[in-house]
Length: 185
Ligand SMILES: Cc1cc2nc3c(=O)[nH]c(=O)nc-3n(C[C@H](O)[C@H](O)[C@H](O)COP(=O)(O)O)c2cc1C
Image (cartoon, rainbow, N blue to C red):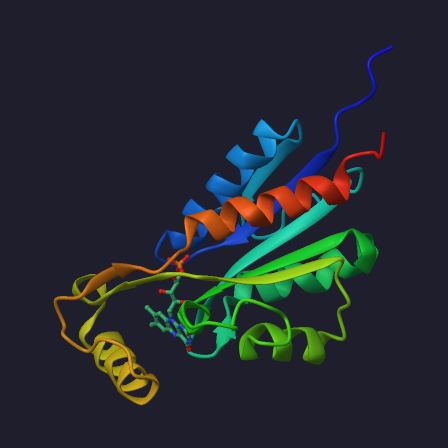
């Protein structure tokens, strides 16, 4: 009999689409590594059934104004009841992760605080840089992000659109995840 393929269930909360793009890319790379995936958009389906049989459940969430999107935070509280921390992975998408050293649970303030606040000890945690898209933002949001960028030394020109996501790093994350769920030969 063929051994069953490992499975990663990916749940995500995205406001402007970049987290969705990252999750799609992760799923593509995982499939290439022989891992089955199953993707759920928490904005479309805020209280989905949790895939308790998955080898790993990954939650990816975008940051807005210092916090992961509420749909992701709510989902995490449900997730923890059904899945042990050792089978949970979290990916935080934010603009702070564009800077060197800010892609880890220790180095990324949002991820670090999230894990601390929830006392979550996931098997895997990483931060991935998102996208800056001033023209797409409403006036208030644009002003706020410009203020944040002034403080953090980023671009403030309102016509700026930059995808900071490091796709090679996303591929490397998928590889790490695949290693975690693949049975050792
Ligand atoms: C209104 C708004 C607030 C944001 N707040 C933060 C923030 O506090 N810290 C940060 O690092 N990035 C912040 N970002 C950047 C987003 O995390 C980034 O654009 C990410 O790609 C969004 O993911 P999404 O497209 O999946 O919604 C903010 C973006 C917007 C539009």
